[in-house]
Length: 198
Image 1: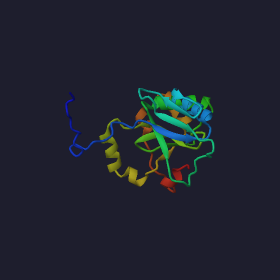
Image 2: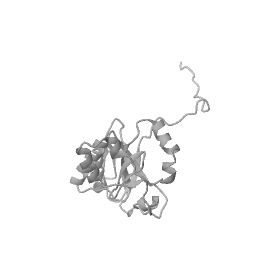
Image 3: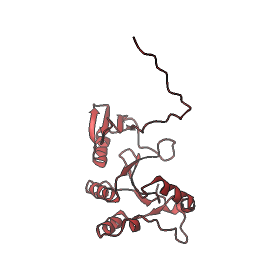
Image 4: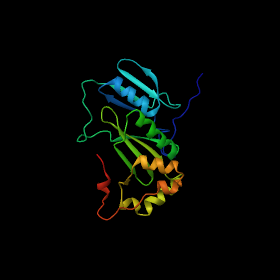
């Protein structure tokens, strides 16, 4: 005989998702997108056929799902929908090493920006979907909150563009991490929007 059980009370405490499981994208060329994501994320196929491919790089059965829709064109900036997907790297060194590895695959970021809380490299996949590869500058949530409360983010909500090759060289030269990740203020004549690359 089964023992009756009650559903959890949804009010106390609030029930939230345990994690973000995966993102699924419609792609126009499944083979091309599959190869691109395998390279960028160092992923492995968890399941695939001629219509779809599930990719994983950690304990989750799939983090990225790709569904073949060959009739579709590239994603357009003028339409609502997904802005970007972000992946966090454990250190600035691993982010910069990934940048160098992808350069060897002729995969280049289109926007490199120090947002303040993150140092971020943005890429476009074969369908024009954007990926952010980032390093968290601050170790604790309280540090991020202090950055926001300082007014620095309100003054410049976009960030400061940087040259990843120059940052990688400075990293290899042994420059302190705090100096590498410190975000300079906007210069005279610069606005947050002058840092944006669509």
